[in-house]
Image 1 (cartoon, helix red, strand yellow):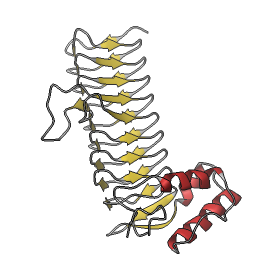
Image 2 (image 1 turned 30 degrees about the vertical axis):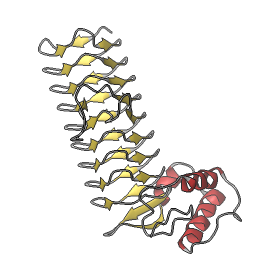
Image 3 (image 1 turned 90 degrees about the horizontal axis):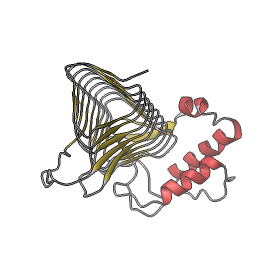
Length: 261
């Protein structure tokens, strides 16, 4: 199928468009933009310079990708990037900014769903299959893993990490890290339990689930995980905890020695 570009859309001279692209009315694709095959760009959506996206992405109306980072020290002539994978859905009013560092990257992987008016700041990393509900806003340098669900109105302080398969309760404010596989919520935010539904959907059941449950209890009691059977999930959890945190862990003593409360 040939490209379908509305006559009111603006396509800059050196924007690179793949096959089977749909571009709606009054959309804007600037220079130094690469759009993969099969992408759909809704009406009034804007893709700023230095954005690269893969195949099958859907931009609903009024999405803005790759605008300047909200960093008062940033110089507009700096070359930095927003890199997007495949098959993501960006609903109305979603925004994502390119990196605040020379040749740096803000990265969104594949198969994510971003609901209306959610925001990804500069230098963030978003894993595969993650969902942001309405009005989620994350600060710069936030790292969100795979298969995370961020409830409506969640906000995250810069440099926070949200581990894979975590779920964050709507309207929660994150000023520390979220451990993988966990449910976090409350004011102040705390780890309450495992993300049971998310783990079941991911096929992490039976003994694999029980080992994670044991790990959660040991962490709450400030005890080592070394005596547990080494499953894929436990190995991932240990590796995640071993990375030095800039923010600490919600409601836990950080077993990696990062002096979290």
